[in-house]
Length: 162
Ligand code: ZN
Image (cartoon, rainbow, N blue to C red; front, top):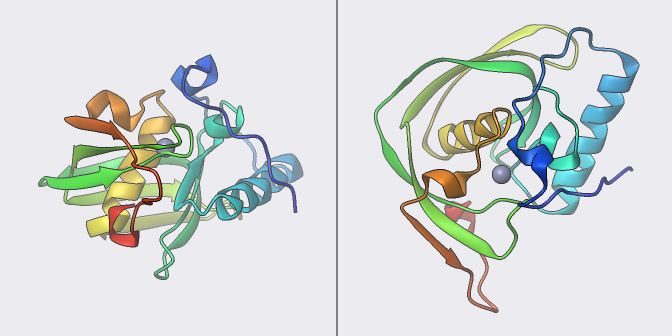
């Protein structure tokens, strides 16, 4: 298990437009494993490569409800509607905010085996995808939040709030 150091807001690596992955090399596969390890260690539902200092278009996701993906070079095919999303971010610990996200999102990507995959998501999974894909373009949820505040002590985000 290789948990990597998470980068925090203020680190310029979080503001970079990430580069495409050209080849799913053994090094990229190891990186994906480390991203899952890091995400699980921190009880996250998603992690983007720049959050561990790698400026490549890779995200990992697990909504703990059956949707577990490594997405390489993901892109949005379409998004519709609007929903309110209460969010936190591993790169902005101790805070939460409310963001408007699409209520449905259609994403295509390659998986860790180089196969094309397609995800049509709504609800919480749509929020996670939208949040993580933003990271690949240097966007943090805080930029879009219409409410942003410090979490009270002894109070954690509940599952439905992630
Ligand atoms: Zn985030």
